[in-house]
Image 1 (cartoon, rainbow, N blue to C red):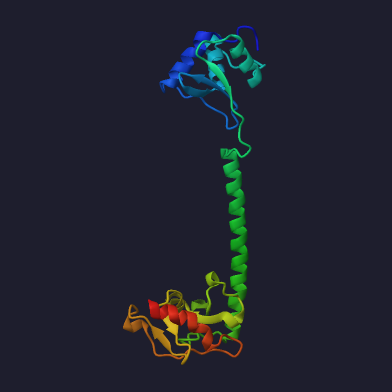
Image 2: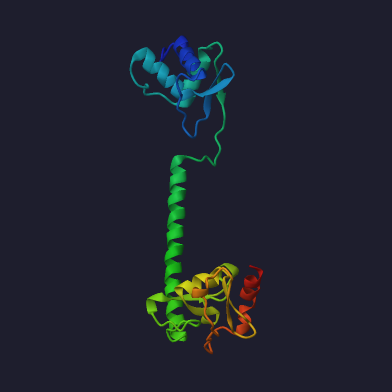
Length: 228
């Protein structure tokens, strides 16, 4: 740095204002050099920039490397101002890193969702074929109302195999997943929770195709239903 880059008193005034909260000194996320003043630490480079701008009404000089600024301040022995070096962490979290990581995570989620939608569409196609396009409980055949349900939920490590499938009308699918409708693993009779209105209940025996699930596969769902 040049011989008289800024005056000592100018730097002290800037640090004093920062100490009182009158100004805020900007720090880079990899800041290593700090100025200790009145028991507080302030980013050295921004304090030096402000001092230069104040004394010379211009921006930073060309040779504005941290090590040179530190040497300049130390060499002038500014009373009450000490240069402190703190080695930055290798795992610094910056807005740029957060944004980059967020974008990567979003891309990962979108990829998973695309695969999930593709798998679910394929699962539904196979289940529709297996059940002949007819709800296993209500015998509804309206294609847009039919959904492929899992006997053992995917969240409980259930598979997308047709042996774990049940074709249900959309409203019955919701009740089944909420444990408000269940299939007795002994008789195949469909039961509804007392919370379900009389108008929405029905007397039915589940219809299961040969390649589909067996009644015993509904044991866990039945237990969950009885606990509700």
